[in-house]
Length: 240
Image 1 (cartoon, rainbow, N blue to C red):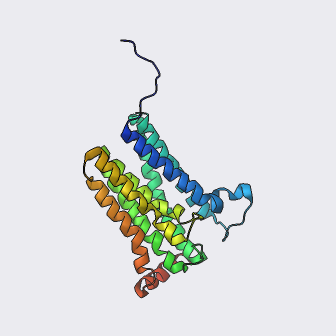
Image 2: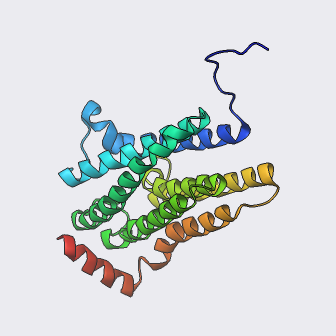
Image 3: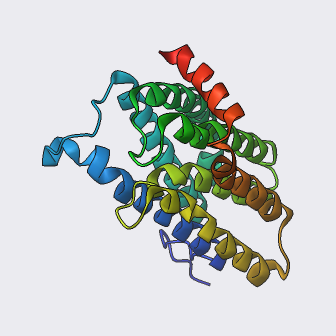
């Protein structure tokens, strides 16, 4: 039987699903951060607060992480599993840098009042200080289960959704708080894929949904409380 050399691998339903999720995440990051960061060198528009070298470094690592995630999903879709695994070391290094820089940038942002104008800086600090540990925990869990593809993929998606709140909170289509919660709308999408492909919810979807919900809803429950404001003031003082 003749073999077609160089033909593209046919995308399965699973590969199409994760490729669509990765593409959506990339698009939302560009749309959310475009007007306030990516487009400024071209448009010349002013930023609300001056950028610092730390912000630019964080922006670089953040952007590289999103692009790497898109590339990793693309490699799996193209059945380039060996390359995907070799890139895992790069992913671990970037994820570690994301955790460190995300925390430092959040603390400096509270000092500089760089969050949404409608939310006090110390209150808004709850968003990254709950979100960064959730991101780190999900990434570490995903790497732990890297030999279990179904668990690994879902945990990576939920880690990305938690990180996505920083972009959706900047979308020009509503208040920042509503935008920050927008990634929760993708939980039913992942659950739908579970039911379609497996006939039941995957355990990683359950755990990932719980961590995502706590990291996004949790800040709203604590950010005006006395204990949180006291802690946030102390933490921000470390970066002052």
